[in-house]
Amino acid sequence: MSQFNNKVVLITGASRGIGEAIAHQFAAQNAHVVVSSRSQEGIDAVAAAIREQGGKASAITCHNGDKASREQLVEQTVSELGRIDVMINNAAANPYFGNVLDMGFAAIQKTIEVNIEGYFHMSQLAGQQMRKQGSGVIINTSSVNGRITGYNQSLYSASKAAIISMTESFAKECAPFGIRVNAVLPGLTDTKFASALTQNEAMLKMILPQIPLGRMAQPEEIAPAYLFLASDEAKYITGVSLPVDGGYLA
Image (cartoon, rainbow, N blue to C red; front, side, top):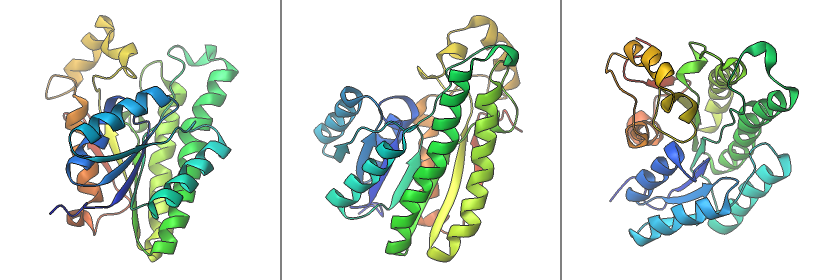
């Protein structure tokens, strides 16, 4: 019997890519996964696929850049399932790829609202529920860009650096309540979200030589890090940012 049996795992940004892979892997370990994103069609498809494979899944929409939507997501999850054992902040925005001097204000706002405000507030909301329970795990998706700024990705990189700092702060302040908080730093991964890089031959020629393993990751290769950090095997680990990057940051 998996240690995640009947655990409630809430995952934002779960309609595709890394979030979808995380949902499938937790479901395979008998967790009840709550998949969330702005796309009802997308999360319905993910939840249906999990249930077809014998897993347990719910689909709840949430715009991670909207306060009321975040509150509704947590309230509905607790109302329907009674608790949140693992909160995975994975939704992200990267609406602009280009020179820092030309980034429009709307793109600036969106990046901050989703990647910083959204992660902070969702961690608060889930953490408040976990404090009532006396236990819980929060895992944030940062990026290798939080350590080494990505070319033409200035604010996205800054937001991912903020998530690393946020993870450390929450880890220190939530530990007395039995809540562990960690982050995963994916490297270049073959997802639609990263298509500005993965579908750009010039960018790949620049990036791939910097990755010791010489290739981009698949989402299924990133997801196990989340299972580990949520598991009992990691029960003395909090405040860390774990790169899963083919050696890029080495």
